[in-house]
Image (tube, rainbow, N blue to C red; front, side):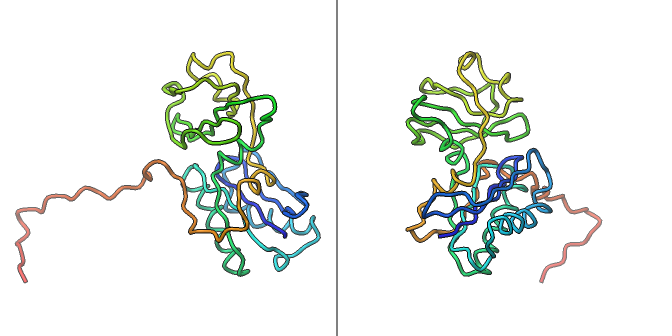
Length: 224
């Protein structure tokens, strides 16, 4: 089964083609630290298909990271995945992007982990894991205000956020991992019928309805 994997929950844009039967990643494209997910995603998918030697019509499923992530970038990946699935008549499976990152941890070496991504606005999205299974989260918080109920052996977080972690995590091993094509697939159950894609925004959008303004006394009230 050929699967298209997409993740736009972080500043990195990830797309790839993987054979779920053999587990072989046939092609993968990564653009680090981009704000142009919308412009780059479809061309990257086309490049990955070309490298894998297959076409859109050969795909059997789509797996997409559903966050948590910033509204605009996350929406690009999920809407594109839904559009591909609808156009091709194939299922689209949504997975937690933090779970996909955690799937890349060497669980033979570590037993517990904190996985965090940049939420911007001086905050992080995070979840904790034990033996690869999520124990808490996802949630959003300022990194310095992070309080964990259990100790962790490793922190997976972008390098520029390491120094912002609380004192309790000083000295804990740190790594930077991304939700790769293979790890996105590892979090999806292709045997199940997927439900609706639900984005994990975790906070309200910036746009808000304006507050109602009082009507001027000079304007006469008109009753029906």
